[in-house]
Amino acid sequence: MRSIESSRARLWPLALALLLPAACGGDDSEAGSDSDSNSSSGVTLTSSGTLTAGSDTGTDSDTAGSDAGTDSSTTAGPTDPSDPTTDSTGPGSDSDPSDPTDTTRPTDPTDPTDPTDPTDPGPVCGDGVLDPGEECDDGDANDKNACSNACTMVPCEEQEGGGFDEVLSFIWIANSTEGTVSKIDTETAVEVARYRVEGGQPSRTSVNLFGDVAVSSRDPGGVTKIVAKQENCVDMNNNGVIETSQGPADVLPLGADECVVWRKPIPSTGYGFGPRATAWVAGSPDPVSCKYPPPLLWIGWMDAQATAHFLKIDGADGATLGEVTYPWDQGSYSPYGGAVDKDGHFYVTGLNQAPTVKIDFDTLAITDLGNPNGCKYGMTLDLNGDIWSGACFGEGVYHWDHLTNVWTTLPDSGGTRVNGIMADANGNVWGAGSSGCRLVHIDVETKTYVNNNIPLPGCSQPWGVSIDYQGYVWVVDKNNKAFKVDPETYQVVAEVGGLVGPYTYSDMTGVALKQQVVIPE
Image (cartoon, rainbow, N blue to C red):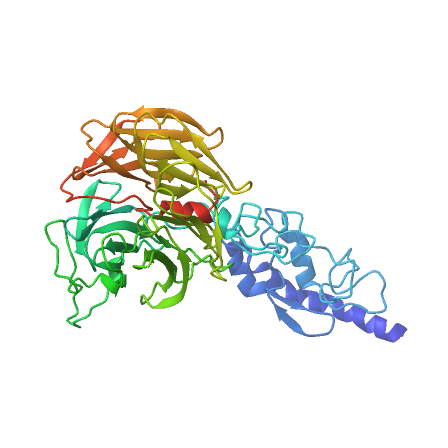
């Protein structure tokens, strides 16, 4: 053993002399670039006798004075494995960086994979990266879209907007005496299209969550579906062009407009029997995508024997999927007003003392809800599931409580009639009043009038009322116009003319349906 050590002692100066030029040759380039020194001296002789490239990575990045310690490890000569004071990692270190079992190995704070990195904050909600324990992470600050700021999924009904604003930015008003329906942009108050519909004397319009409208005509009886977005229109003659109305003066013949996707005749026998009550069903959204399924449609009409027919219709093609009948009032009109709740149940009111009923979406079972002591006219369903109805002969406004099944009357509505009526998402009910001409405002919670005589300058016979997606109140006047009213100031902010015998008092915008399935913002 002594002779081996003696030989090593003699060889040591020679080995040192051979290695020193290589170690010192990078001094001229070191000040300019660490990458130059790595290319000339970034090789380390390990204790096993193998060569590894790049072992200086992480040490050359030190500032002035750091290379003195690191270069000594790369230029050191052979070591004696029996010498406890030295090892291959350089003086003063007992750890082996190549040994994964060595718990004394120092950590590298610049290594992003190092679990002991003190600068690593761990999972961060809101960085757009899905970390363990997060349901989602969209990286934005919106707390009411599909992913909350707590990185949990937001139920579809609690999401803001629901993506409906673009398609629900139109109001569809039937021109009853012309046999058409007008599509009006609620933002600009400009009529953008007009369509001829099946049957005659159209009145009720209902808009689904895709923005498409169903128009019911009273005599001859019929139902028409018109799609809102041109990409959903059908090139029926295969000429590569969608031929559709471009404005109120551009009404195509019946069957020629390619945005009118289906028409359904109804076998009613006269004006009093044709379909009136009309309402789309929202359906249940996919819990992940929150996309709604193709919707179904409810309508009601009456035969000559005074039997009401309630049809559940496939919204895609107009086919009847289900039908149920119910005895109606012999001296009245067909089922008059209709609305749906979030579960798709159809609430229907008859004119005057004709029945008020609820039709179950799944079973088609019919429940009679009774009547107030007076003449019912237009109707709406508020967010509580209660019915509100205008009165024909000065009685006021009627309210039906879904919890108690009791009707009450709010007297003194400011005039003789309240015709169309509509609930909004902010706890209000609005009524179109005539004799005298006015708008009526009711508080849902207190069941009192906020204002029963809001003036509509230039009005004649306000008949229908609806709410647009921005919360403005629209009033349809039978004198060929419609008003857009600010619900806060009661000021008329826009007026649309050029209508022809307008007569609609139903969910003309689709916002009433949206309110049933999307929690108000």
